[in-house]
Image (cartoon, rainbow, N blue to C red; front, side, top):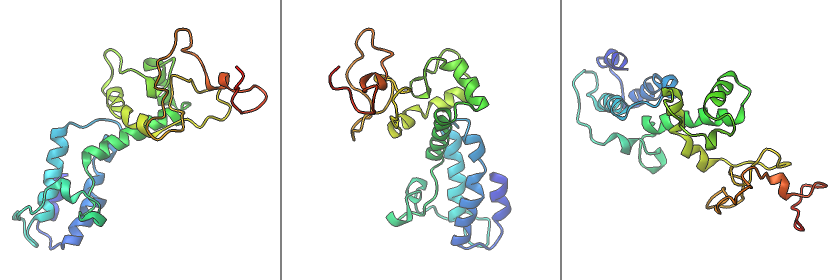
Length: 206
């Protein structure tokens, strides 16, 4: 990233040109790595400092200009007064969350099978523990677990794959999870057990 920015410093670039280069080139450089690993905050802060300095550097020269605005403020959407740049920390978390979603959506993928066999053989990603001596990859993906938990829920269907006390499936705005503690002996209770076997309606008589 530093090499890319240094090669552009002496060119006569307008503010719009610098914005395009940062969004289309510079911010895409670490995206592959961030999809698998959680980058240290010190590293993302340094990369954002480089981008911010390049954005405010003097036109047509390599001398640094005055940073009139902090990076977190110009990362705000343009409709709200920012420039729409990406926050690398939030982008890193979002990409790791996408990897976590893949563990839920495509369990037959090879890497999903490997991680499931090692870290959560009897559950799913939403309830998987970090475990003892985890790999850096698994620890990184787990850092986005809470983000995924807040944004996903099961589509019930026949309810055979959804545990009542172990998954987000409720249709509520505050929480998709059952808030009451699981009674003894009901850990494996599934949503289909609460439904009539002849239809997809709730079994109100049981």
